[in-house]
Length: 111
Image (cartoon, rainbow, N blue to C red; front, side, top):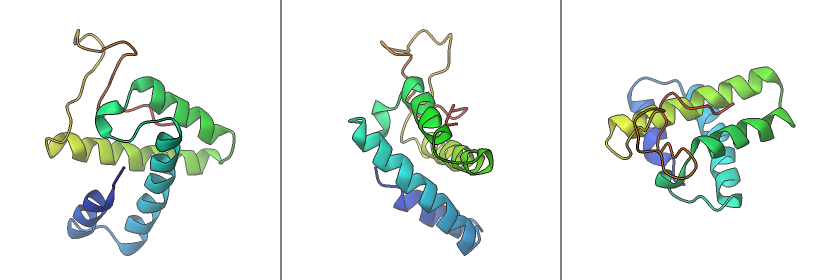
C-alpha cells in the first residue's frame, strides 16, 4: 500500500517532520505486514486483519510503540474515509462480508 499521499497531507496540515517520519515508519511496517498477508489494497482490509496486526505487534513491540502504531493506522484510515478512498463498515450495518469486512474501519482495531 502507498501511504505517501497521506503523509504529505499530514505534513501540509501541520505535522512536524518528526510526526511525519514516525507515522511513515509505522505505516511502512503495517503495509509490509499486509502484503505478507496478501492484502495490497485498502478495500482488502478487514477487522480480522487489523486485529491480526495488533497481535503481531504484541509479540515484538512495547505497549507504547503499539499505541503509536495504532494511532498512525487509525489516523490513516480516518483520512482515507474522509478522502472518499474507502467506506467505513461498522458492526450492525448489515454489509460486512464474510469476515466482518471493514474497509477503512476508522474506529479500527489496529493494536
